[in-house]
Image 1 (cartoon, rainbow, N blue to C red):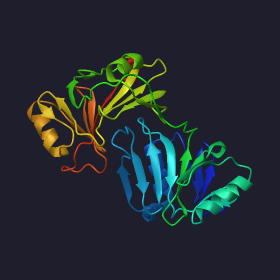
Image 2 (cartoon, rainbow, N blue to C red; image 1 turned 45 degrees about the vertical axis):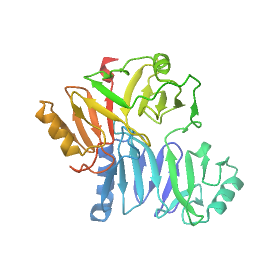
Image 3 (cartoon, rainbow, N blue to C red; image 1 turned 90 degrees about the vertical axis):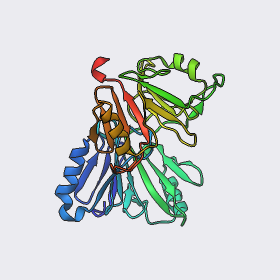
Length: 302
């Protein structure tokens, strides 16, 4: 193993540069390990959300071109070294090389390589490749477990889009409440893009027309409700305050004026008395618009 590259440890993490990065580690543990190893050479670390509906946070270590993905309990579940980060697996260099050459070498190594022109997965080794515009490996995704199959649509009858959501304190919305069954919600909301989430539940339903992403536990009960619109305009109201798409400072000022407490978080704020959070995609900037509203069931109550 080249000590100056990341070596993939299937379903465990990566090792290299004198440090191990292991799945399941807490976000503060990962940060402390990097700081201890690299000191002043660590460079900037930029927290962000990969998508508005993500409950967890990503940390981008810019100098090392490495993105660490954390779940809703701040545990590491995915790693993405970029094209500038040397990455290898079992003696095969993955980054900095022509994409087709890498796929051919992995196949000749006896590995199953599944995908298309844009990207390939190596299921038994727990990683995936993406192709960049120069026909080289653009990044490597390293998984804690099998990422599962492709999402597919369920077959319920269509219903009219719900684009105005009114929040109910501690419960969800007037239409969708934490603890409801998946079957009941399908009857209310119509067909969903169904998938297995990478963390936080056993099933997930995406309702793009309604701006809803719902995550369910092993009993098919709703545990996480995310309101976030992509490609469709919609609103989320708490009392007389519209939350989505407005600047964080403006929304929190309106809530505070109405006697609602907002506690700052890394990428947004939490409204503890009413059980929901306001999520931002990037750094908590007063002018940045709120991208999502999130309700999560209290694990201690289940």
